[in-house]
Image 1 (cartoon, rainbow, N blue to C red):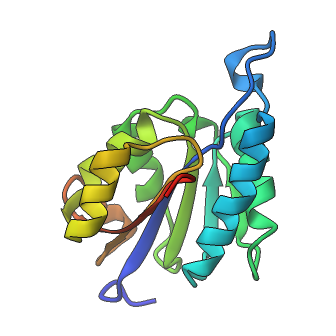
Image 2: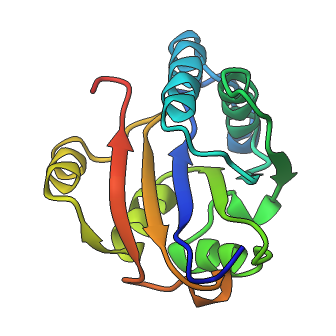
Image 3: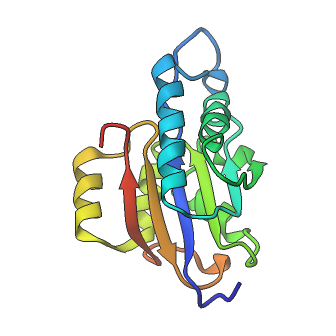
Amino acid sequence: MSVAEPRRIVLFRHAKADWPQVSDHERPLADRGRMDAAEAGRRLADTGVPFDQALCSTAVRTRETWKLAVQEFPHRPKTVYEERIYEASPGELIAVLNETPDDLSNVLVIGHNPGMEALTEILAGSAEAEVRERINRRGFPTAAFAVLTFKGSWKDVEPGTATLVDYWAPTD
């Protein structure tokens, strides 16, 4: 992979979680979340992006979201369960992305808000007008995802270096 070719980052918020009497990290998906996770997986598959790697938070709800979404993919990417994604700030998420090997082109991050929404805003130095309008109107609800592109090395990912090219949320 040449660093001159565009790379993709997909920031995917976990689906709707339930609120049983467990720690936040152990919260499972709600029924609606299971349906939305599968639908998000179909929408991600429809993008035609051949994902090289998925970076998934270790929280139960993110792991369950990923398990349901990836079943819809024609090719299962390598999955790395990353503790640092849970409750991560945008800066911490950028640090995780900066560690991505340059032979990977397309990476999916399954995480939490406010991190996913904030990172989308911070990385997107530009955006297609219609996509920006939809994300501004909708915010970043559960099971939403944003697709960003950038050129260069993963080590160069920093605020303003990407373009927001697509966005989807379950009610879109």
